[in-house]
Each structure stands twice: as structure tokens, then as C-alpha cells.
Image (cartoon, rainbow, N blue to C red; front, side, top):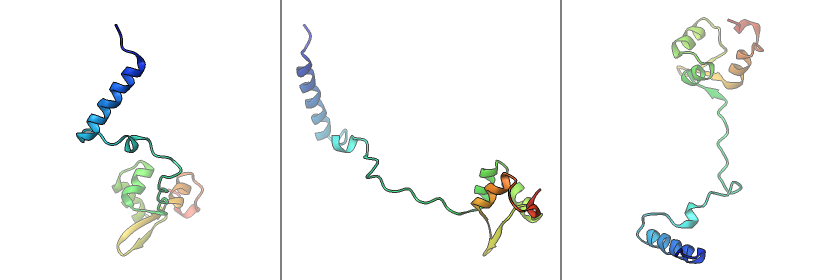
Length: 104
């Protein structure tokens, strides 16, 4: 003899309430997927990147980036000793669309 669907649902509800009361699972409202409209907006993408991030974007080592900066092959700026790159310039350089003076 099997149990009816309504009986199974009632048993499941009771079991879930038991687990919630024991603190073993969160409340069902918290378990629902968040409403995409109510999610916090994403942070805007930074316009500048450091050496490590530039290396990741380009798929090379940080040593390669430092060498390219030293040889003035990449557009960059130095701010208080930090080497920074404008993200858009790196992307343009990778596509070969940036000024000829920076072509490797």
C-alpha cells in the first residue's frame, strides 16, 4: 500500500518545518532564488588595471609586462610608483588598433 500524494506532501512539509526549527536548514523564503530585478547592481568595471591584471588579460607573465613597459611597447602611466594601464588601451593594443609608437 502506497501513500497518497497529499499525505506525502504533508509529511514532507512537517519534515522541512522540523529541520527549520532545529536550525539545520534556512527558512524556505531565504532558500528561494533571488529576484534578478531586486539584486544589487554590479560594480562598474575599473578603467585602469595593474601589471598583474594586464598580464592576465594578455596571457603573459608579469615579467613580460615589465619588460614591455621598460621598452615603451605598451601604453601606460606611472602613478606614485605604480604602473597602470587603461583597460581600453590594452584591448586596442591587442587588436592592433592603437598608435604605431606602441607596436611591438
